[in-house]
Length: 572
Image (cartoon, rainbow, N blue to C red; front, side, top):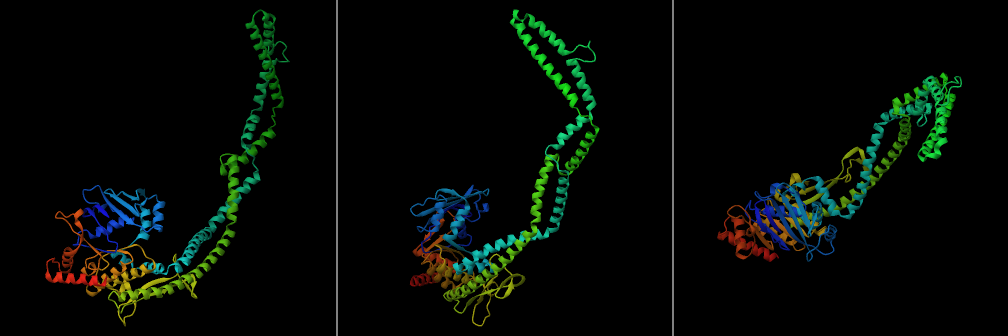
């Protein structure tokens, strides 16, 4: 793994051993940056504050060896990544402005893809993870992880039923809560639909009636105008001396027809005048018909105005015109059908809710039984591990219980509270020595004991749900003496089946490592390429001496360091 411009690290390469690698160094030298770098490669949150002052971006590049055919390989290939001789090249860049980019096998990918791979590649544990183990929710997650399919199967079914129940409950509550509002809305819709139905409007009827009312209201003026126009075109029978347009045009046409053979131009004009004469005759006939057909009946006008008033009453309430009113009626009828069906829907949802609650009761009981059985095996396995971590008399147990809730589901003959993961409340208990009552580890475990309990839990997981790499960041905090030696010995045993990387201050732990890396700053306070070195021989003895006594050249410390290394080699 190469790290550039991250925290105190300027440019450094970290070579991790296939077995047990211990990362040591003075406080503040940058050991934690190794953990942070790996976290970035595994999709962790990008904090621009990590970028080294004066640098534009921090860059972490890693080469991860993958076992062929694993789901991690398949997921990487789905993302478009290409393997390099069986290894996956991963890169993460964090700019000083906060932008983050991720690359997987030469392809740019979303950071979330790295996080997906992380779940199958590395188990990271640090001080925050120890604190997390104090939370009952994390303890339940640990138990469920250990139980495997025995819990995963019913839990998946339970989660689906629980999600559906929540959706049904929300819809049912809305229907019941808004029942009065919906009843009022239905009454208003019925009133409006009845009002429209009583009028029985027709599409476009309002426009047609408006035109008819305009015509009937001016019937006399229209009739007079038609008569004057007809007389001007066709003559007035009561006045034989009057001159009309038809007669004048006819005279003009005859005059041109008489001489049209002498000039083609004049012949064309004669034809056009003939067309005018025909048009005048047609218009005159239509004017006569219009006057005869014009209805000046005041009763009809009154009926039209009354009908228009009824239509106007509808358009004031339901739309700008009758077409919009009819559209409102259509939508309102559909909405009323929906509202009238609410009672049936409430009945359906109530029945579904009761059925889902019964189903959850059965599934919650299955989860309780599976967790109770797994808890006994898990506690026994963790207790056995604690014996090899200098806690021979400690006993770990799980309390699997429920809380009474009259609104809950029935489990074991009781009505108990339930949630998205079942009805169980899981708590990890520790009795550190014989005679001590089991107490929640949040109250009954010291810092050193908590570190060893967490390590024991992870070792148990390694036998049931292994990952290729385990990273422990000061998991040995609060531990010393014989307990520290036992932790080192247990980590070395775990490293026989997986890669183990430990950031530690304890020489008793570091002595058991297959490879020890020293992180140290230069005089200007930075960690450069030469600042992360593999310690061997005399150099490793000197570093262990410093960790033991703070003095690299102390003969007593050197003797103790050599003794630790000899003990570790003998165990190996």
